[in-house]
Length: 340
Ligand SMILES: *[C@@H]1O[C@H](CO)[C@@H](O)[C@H](O)[C@H]1NC(C)=O
Ligand SMILES: *[C@@H]1O[C@H](CO)[C@@H](O)[C@H](O)[C@H]1NC(C)=O
Ligand SMILES: *[C@@H]1O[C@H](CO)[C@@H](O)[C@H](O)[C@H]1NC(C)=O
Image (tube, rainbow, N blue to C red; front, side, top):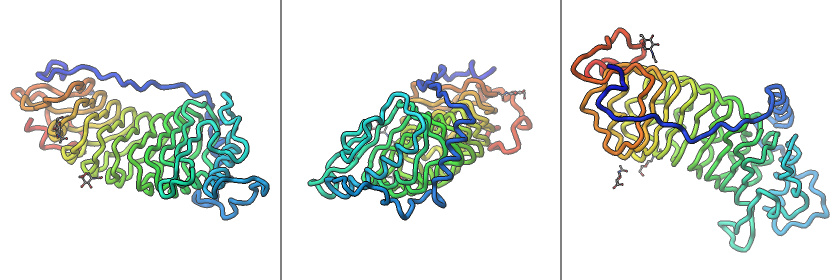
């Protein structure tokens, strides 16, 4: 009996995330990434002379807005195409009036305004992130989804100590998992889906106090780190990558998990019973992987509203073991699989 006939009732989970088309050729993207490398100092830290070039006659309400001006002008220079003219009004010292730039009272000084958030979602801008963006020290929200930003996230982003939401999804970022994530103490929401990130996930990622983590539609591979059980995220989506190996049994320790979407990877071996011990999960999708083994009738998945195991090699009863353990891949988390 295949998984679809087993006692669990489940249905397919269709992700609500739609892939937006981004019209930037690979050649253009790598051109922009090379331009970024040329401008970035070693490691992507801020250049020492970043204050050069601010017109001396410009008057700013406070030094922090002057710093923000330097950052935003450097960014505007790093944009090669702005078809919707979103940044057309990024001119002059009044940065709080720039489209997509939002100011608030400073947390440590209610008498002054500072740039508190950036929202350029859907602007279709082609360009890269210059090191000067690290001057936006007071930014709590940085949303640039659905643009054509290329290259990497510069090391200078480590200076954004208030950054709470970082959404760079649906762009053309490349390279390893962005290291700057580890040095952002206030980060709670991380969305890097629909980019070209590759390589492994750093184990420290799951030791960060995040609420939501979207990594889907990249080119990540390797095993899921054992540290996953430390994470307090309520949403974890790693679908449509090349993750391989088992799901670590530590997953049973994820205390706040609500939605887990692991579909369309190369995960395999057995499904750890701990996966079904997570309380309060409402969406659980491990479809289109290479899981094998037998699912026991004893699984309790009381709160699960959407559940998909489809397109694996799972069998659905504990009474007639039909999958031999020799069919399991070498790295399978046996012998647990045989006891189901
Ligand atoms: C998860 O929450 C618990 C309880 O609040 C806390 O002790 C732990 O440090 C948190 N873990 C992470 C990775 O943030
Ligand atoms: C699960 O949900 C119930 C009711 O919504 C809540 O009382 C309980 O604290 C939750 N458990 C965990 C581990 O989050
Ligand atoms: C299921 O197992 C069969 C035979 O071992 C194999 O050919 C097939 O590719 C497997 N399918 C998946 C989705 O792993």
